Length: 299
Image (cartoon, rainbow, N blue to C red; front, side, top):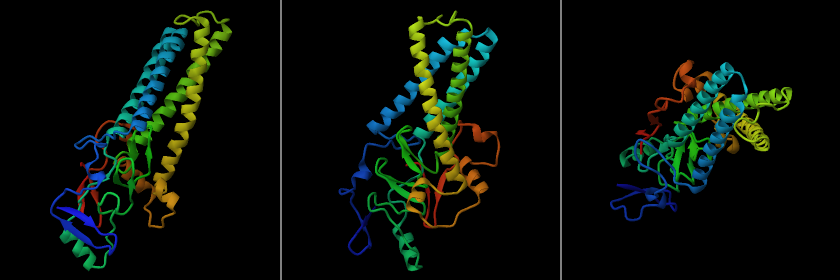
């Protein structure tokens, strides 16, 4: 059965056929299954650009900057930088392909709706995707779904930041920020060393002018990325601690909030531990529970 909502008298009806489903219910922009992917050209372009910037930083720092230092420092810095880039990429991929907390269409039954309405409970629904709308859920026009605890839609991960993938998004911004700062440190050390040695041994991989151009772009990229991700990371941590998403903040929604410690545990999936820093493993949420129903988030 499919839910049909009449805007005129605000009543619910059930229809037997699915010939008149809304575009959101048949859109090819999302992938159904254990993984989730949005076929949005702008988001895909931004995600690809993210990897291009990361690859450029890796090539310049490992092929141009690191060889100018002693062997031990080169080995340690290469190991550390590669590890940070790996964590950044894994965090980005998990944030991009993890179901952010989608509210499935037809996510409750006629009997459940009738029961709740007879008890005086307000049953909210989304007029855009026809799904029953739980508390703290908002509709995303790009994902074409209601997302539980939606913070915002981020083109850089080509996905919404919601209940299920906020941890991965926070880790992505954190590791890119640390990677960028570390890259700036290595680049500054490289420039200082080259000046001390009258630029001898600084063009082992590229001719002198190309080295200068590559370093300038690397410094610009590192500064821009570190600043941007630092702002995003701080914004996300503030949103988690205050238990208020970006959309809720813009709409100035009044509601009860939980303690900051409970909110952190809710996002990262456990009590404080090293697992908070790991982008590996499953998202912290398996099920979306509301006053109406308990539904699986895999759609």
